[in-house]
Amino acid sequence: MESEKLAESICTLLKDHKAIDVCMINVKEKTSLADYFVIAGGNSITHTKALVGHIEEMTEKEGVSPKRREGVREGRWAVLDYGEVIVHIFNDETRLFYHLESLWDDGTNVKKF
Image 1 (cartoon, helix red, strand yellow):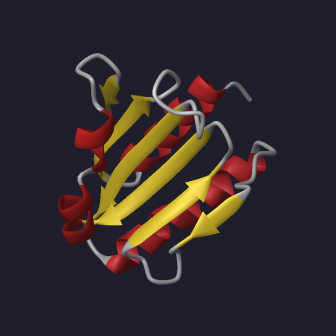
Image 2 (cartoon, rainbow, N blue to C red):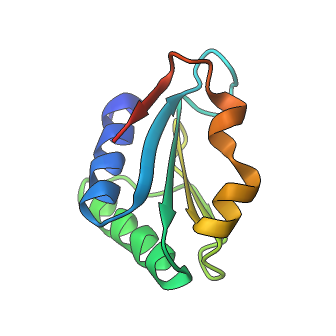
Image 3 (tube, rainbow, N blue to C red):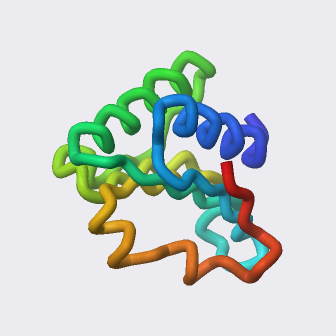
């Protein structure tokens, strides 16, 4: 699956399940880690874990599984690494502290959902 299409699909899934401030950041020209970062928030640890579970369930139906996953058990900052797309799902407090969007936003590469 093309990286942009995967990132947009994940953003839509997150938005449909009440994720907070969902955005997709094009980082192709900024890092070799990935093409896109998807960033979203959950309103509680339980919500964050549920969002992760839903993304994994839906992407696996499409034959796409994360290469790595971190922080899911704690539910404060979960990361799903799909290779070209890295998904970050934060609880409110952790997202405010790290504010990843400000590190990668150049004014033209962020799409809000």
